[in-house]
Length: 441
Length: 99
Image (cartoon, rainbow over all chains, first blue to last red; front, side, top):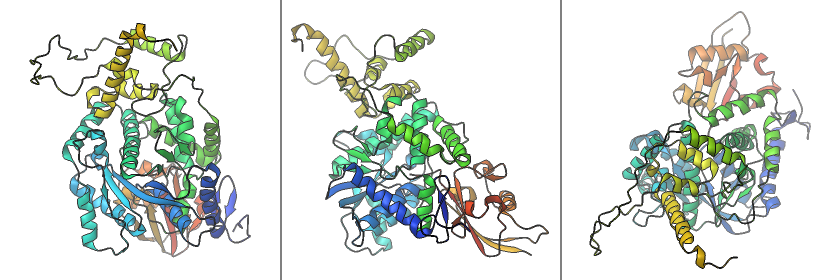
């Protein structure tokens, strides 16, 4: 039996290429890595409220356990922030029945209750109604309960708080069905999940959101993103802190842990992860770009254990070279727009070849020459604006344009995205018409 | 000699086994020793309910599935060639899901 490289005890796990660690040295290594990532980045201040995105899976369970350990009184180099938990139910993506979703939540809610931290629950379909004042509140929230007594009644009342809205569920389903490929569906879900997390953080008064992505997951995401035209956003996705939402910052404290380390950490601490099925579960490997990339990277990793760290280190180093005057953000993913490029660029070449090779599609445009009402409030046109394809594209980065290009019907997108695109179109039109009166800057 | 082992599946791997995480199995008496390699074939034939390619690839586990023998990394134990002893606990953790 091999010996631990640090303390000569019997080893129980091999990490990195060939380093054997015993149980206690491994756990020490993990906790040290976790806590120092906060110290190094200095992003989270003492006493700050941080929302932990908890899905019940391997990564978020490990993250939760590490946070609990880090906040406990006996910890050396104690972490000092105030945690809260958020669980997003994504059952509507798979069309699960309310019964099934309630059953799935049960385990996750129990785990969250036992931590004693304030926790919130919401469902992905709520993102369809963001920004609409008539919608019901985003989250069901626990009160900071001092008793951790777990009775059947307590859990049932928590479940009641999560009102699963059906109309929003239908809208989400329509939107996903409108996206033809699974690649687009997965990307769309990912972007909307982040949107929802940011909105929940704003509503509940948290300024930071913690995600449990491991370096393996991030490396796969990096390559898949580059394949989907999101190369300009890699530094946002790979860094410790992601500040694209401005007021809400996403942090990734597990980004230096491989998925093997995460799984081993959970096993040694008897952390039970409940894995809820997602869109890509049990799908063949060629069903989406993300799936294929995952297969590629994990396959390579098993024969060459330095694959993930190489991809990760390289991706970390990439920074974005933004022109100073680009301040506009993509309406869907909130990254800075990368489409304001000179004539002789790869983007304009791609767009040109797209234009000359596609058949003109008829997008219904509901512009009427006269208002149907009498100016006294009897106007019959729909209050929701119809945004044209061009107007929508202007407000999106290249990667999001590709998602939208894959959709049959862009009006199924969440209203807040369409509204933002419409707003910008109006603004630029207005700017054009008053251009002569503006003083040059 | 028949060998009794406990198999556990977690991290999402249990979805391929009817969501049952723990299995106590009795590997039948055989002339050759039971290695992990043979165990995988046995699991594929007897326990796996669907999508074998998501668990087994070739003669080894699919990349991304961590195998632990009595709470130790199988890389330390000889991987596929490890000879299974009675009452061993073999855990298969999928690292491909969840985050």
